[in-house]
Image (cartoon, rainbow, N blue to C red; front, side, top):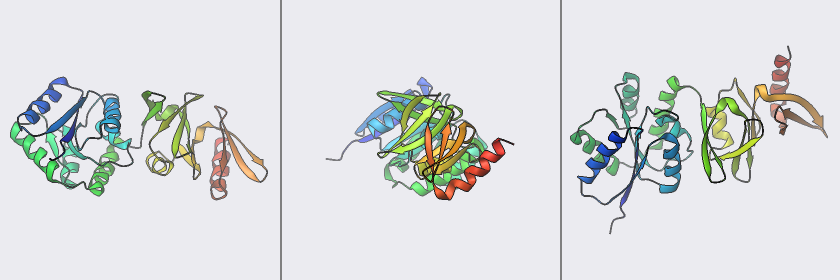
Length: 251
């Protein structure tokens, strides 16, 4: 017996979620369906529910559809985007052959998108190319999903002082003393964060440039102290950049 397909519907509008759920029910196929009313809940359900297909609204308050995708390093699911009329987004979808539904959409158009998602093998390169295209307008990563115990929250980039990799996790330090975890690696964060705002200190750490309070040498190692009291080592290859940054900060 074929395993039921797991489908996640992400939209902040209840009527939009209901429409998709109704169209899915009309197919009489073995689907297991979950709904998310926000980007934050979508991130939680993608982690817990592990969907095969995600119907993802692009324009949502709090965390956009693109920002939802940015919280995952690996994305083993098909994505069908939903969008209101937006020429930039539509050109990006068509250019990279990722399916989308232009609101309001008909049952016929929905079924076309669903059939493609059911048949298509995941093409991560196309999804990443689309993400890069949309990011031209969206800019660098500005919100991070952070886990604190059993709680998940959105943390603004401007409130983060540093990221530190420990024991296969990435710790996030924010709001002057708070700490949480993100699923994103230091390597991926270094690509998605604004290099004018953050700098890589070591293979296992990234710091906000404006949060660097002082630099000191300890037993031949360069160490930086941040405004929230966190102390981080600087690798040999990155010391010249840190010196230049400190010089420019104190000019």
